[in-house]
Image (cartoon, rainbow, N blue to C red; front, top):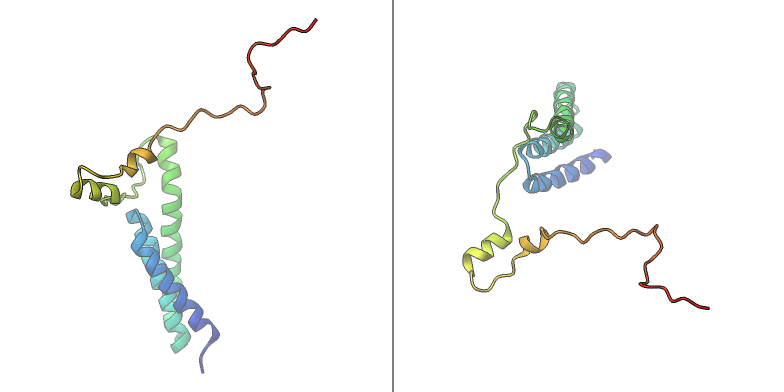
Length: 138
């Protein structure tokens, strides 16, 4: 007898495993690892229906939730205090443009410099437009 939640938990476990590979901080890696583990434990519970496994899964789910709260609140706390009180440890990976630069120094498109250009000044849509000097009609 196949339980309806079995496939649901397995698919979400696989999806969060893929998200784990794309996590940009250590804190997000922990969240996605624990979430992947949670979904696979829930899949295993659907197969075995073990009450002990259900309690272990519940504890792991609480741990996953706490790690997600930490990951979500850390940037807010750090920004409010102006320094890293709750570290999230950003991963340092080579970007595509730095890889291209190292291989083809003479002919590369510097994507990072385009991305980090200053944006133009915002347009004030509430003020009337200035059309230059006004013509006086008599």
